Image (cartoon, rainbow, N blue to C red; front, top):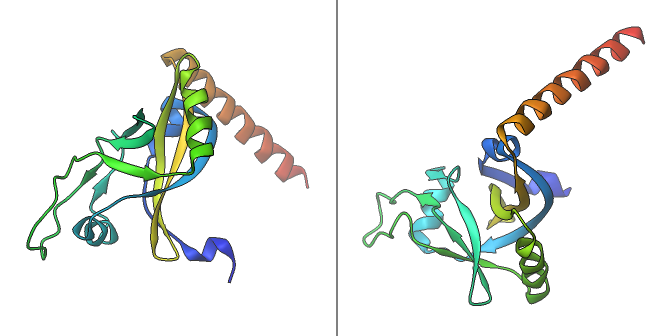
Length: 153
């Protein structure tokens, strides 16, 4: 079975690629409670406002909203900080990248890979309003050029 067939996307941060220029991406695991995993499988999650920071040598995901699971006896705090599971070498690379001016760590998507919850993080540079307009104009120009070349063949 190929790798892409084993991935089931739960949530994607569509605004992230518009608001940020993604320099690098990496995959991490998330430390979750049982009721959070059940709620994730139902798709009750919002990652649009989430971001990650470094705290005492660990990468922590903040402002990720996972709704309460209805069938659980004891539920979790929907906005609690969640620890990301990364190797020390990956954390060191992230630390070096974040210390550069203007770079931040944002979640791009959350998915299931072989029944494990994974998150795709992006080391990103925030875009200004005029940068966003330029990116949209460039994408439109590329699309038109591709369309024109496809018609000729």
